[in-house]
Image (tube, rainbow, N blue to C red; front, side, top):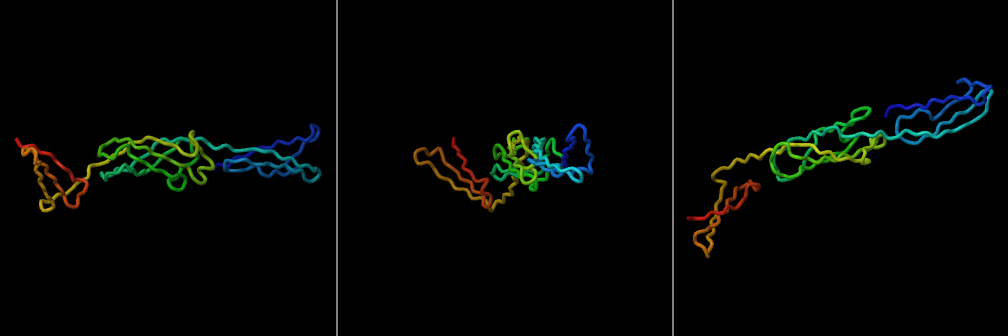
Length: 193
């Protein structure tokens, strides 16, 4: 992404000094990593042609940080990445344009400072010019927050069913269903003393 230039010094014979009016150079300015060929051709009083192979290596980068958006509990491990910053780039890389990113919480439970595995894959021009130590993709561990989901429960939305165990009349099972809030459904065991 940053222009690289190969300087060429010509001296065909120790007794002849050529200046830039005696030759042309092509292929010595490139911006992307890759393999290139430089050609020097004589002109005017000189007739010669010489080619040289040269290359620009991909620049190794690393992930400096990843910012995870906080989310309300939804029962999934899915995490959304707000921003990723990199070390050693010529200019900042843009999410979706220069890299794809996905993330997942270690578990789906609510809490703060939760471990999040962030996977970054370089794409397009960034993949052409940069690399991670691991190759075209890298994994970074960040932290994020899952807040508890707030439920509004109204008395008319609660249904309670009781089942008595026929073998032991001192135990029964109560099932509490909160209509419209499937995340809160549950069974509770009570023992009568």
